[in-house]
Length: 428
Image (cartoon, rainbow, N blue to C red; front, side):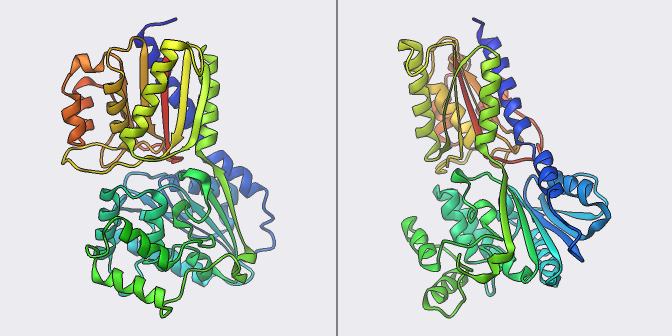
């Protein structure tokens, strides 16, 4: 087979194949070309997400002058040259004032749509933070505080979104409610485990399965009920009491004119990665596209499987490629710099120390990992020999500063897509 250097090159090639499969433009084009738009008077293109620019560009190419107006919230720096759809840069993962202004504009356009109009919603990963329209009396600052608390305590994306939907005026099917009685066609690029419609982007056009009571239970689970702002606590309590309207549920008649379609997902990216790995000569095993949990624990599980493969040839004989996806969580205890993918690579590197001809790569398909400019990191069995202080960096959640001097960060820049994370282990 090949050296560790070749394994590293192969891991990067496999990740690039996953990114190519996650590009949303072709999927948006195919879906919109299948629509009969002649029966609609006005067409509005609305949306939010890290892939918003590329999705909007595809929509413009198909619909052209038929677009009456368009407005999409995107993360800072995630832009494209458009003519008819306005892109609004705003904050992610913590929402900001620009996001609120953009979400208000999106809500207003949706509300202006009539019964003979079509509202196309382009939703991709990051839309939850990029569609911040706090429900009175909750303020943006209070919503930011709740977001920070949830991110820091290790809550998963389903739990975070359940809270977001119940302190929002636009999430949890409420954008569809604003657009009624117009026809709504939502194209979703999924970055969540299971591709649940009500979780992708906090489900702005999907029926909401979560309730105010469940939101309160999540806050209790993480002991946050006394740490959240009073306005947030008061709104959730009012919702439980029935003095604030619930988000629309599956039996709401407004959804008869709403269609939500998943056009891209983590599984499709993993399938493409597996195909590339096979072309490079690896026996390939996709573990799962739905892996969640604490990042360090998941990393050690992957490392244990890699060691088993090297020692016994089970569950797949070398040369082997283990591929998995999903989105893990990090419980922040240190003050370092990093993200879940960099932390995954670091934790796996510790358990694989001294293991010859083994490479691990973990990266986000959106090109960003936590509050850093890296998508993730790559490591091998010799990584700790180059810096034996890995455990100290891991304890401080400082994976970025561990990998940066080693030139082992994966930096792609904005990819204009987002279908969660891809993890690759290659074993000679």
